[in-house]
Amino acid sequence: MTTFALAALVLIMMPGPDQALITRNALVGGRVGGVLTMVGGVLGLAVHATAAAVGLSALLLASATAFTVLKIAGAAYLLWLAVQLLRSAARSRRSPEPAGDLAPALRSACLRQGFLSNALNPKVALFFVTFLPQFLSADAGSARAEALLLSAVFALLYLAWFGLYIAAVDRLGRWLRRPAVRARIEQVTGVLLAAVAIRLATAANH
Image (cartoon, rainbow, N blue to C red; front, side, top):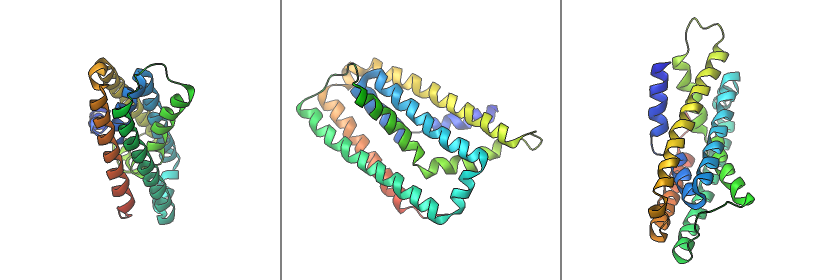
């Protein structure tokens, strides 16, 4: 369990789409925006964790067609999100929007973005099917129950790490929300998501 927790924490801390989205939404919507994005992300992880525990992910990865459909859908969503962020960066330079109470539509957008970025990512499914089983005990009474337990540990580590991360971003918010800085962060986030989308779409199925 300790080895799994350390390995999982390293993976969670690695920069990627989750960190980029949470950073951007924490700047635009304050701590609430960051937390909602984080909650959406962990719900997206829960989809794949549950699917892996019951064997659905294995079936998905065994079907080239199903895997390709999920891959294209995930890449298309990330590319659309990248375009929206690049457009938002241009608006931020002209008319900065101070962080404050989020409107219901923006709250749901933050939650949805976090959820879909993980739920539509086949690499997350691959993680739970290939990485997690390496830590299952050979003498476990129920492999499914142990897999769900490890998935829950991963989710708790995800929430703990990004909870601290959001608090740090919020603490530095005054400087990070300066129009030029926020616009640059949105630009970098958009470019990062576009790069991930292109890499995901062009990756070969194995």
